[in-house]
Amino acid sequence: MDNFPQYDANWLLTGQGNMLKNPPEIANLPVYKNSIDQLLSNENITIMMFAKKIGKEAQDVTDALNSKEDFLPAEFMKPILEQYPNYNPEWLATGIGEMVRSGLSIQPRKVGACEECVKKEEELGELRFKVKLLESEAKSLEEENKYLKKTIQDKEMIIELLKEKSS
Image 1 (tube, rainbow, N blue to C red):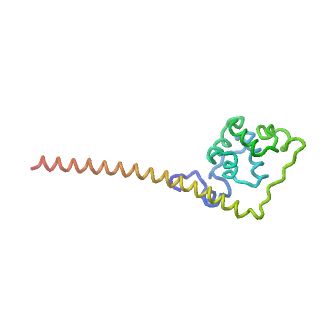
Image 2: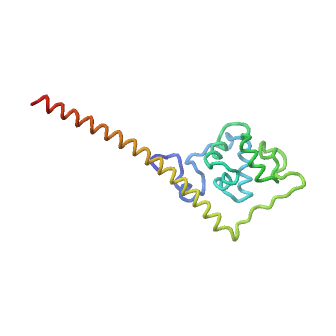
Image 3: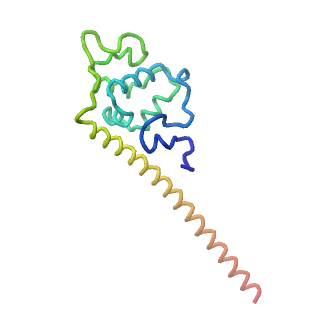
């Protein structure tokens, strides 16, 4: 946690609550952020599950949702509309209009017999995130180890030179 102080420990461990300790104000976020949040709520899915379904990395989805751009990038809109065809594209992009396309309906996703599957998917996503954090930490430690080995070699060389000089 020392390497990533901006992340909320509860979110990392449970997937619940805000990802960031100090999340940005909703007023500063793009309009489509609220639409996507409503879609996630209506479908009863996490950002990780949503990202997987639209073929994107969770971090890419989070970055797009937290960007200051006025519109969701096209590379996100297309897969969202392919996977969630009953949602109104104008509503998704701008928050204007009806949530559901005219003449269609959306049934909120119910968590029932599949609740364990949803939990396992969330746990898997959390574990993948933790693995990435650990890989990053391991890489940092490897770099530090290389630096320390080089420092030791330099010090040993200085010691040898001093010994030769003093004899």
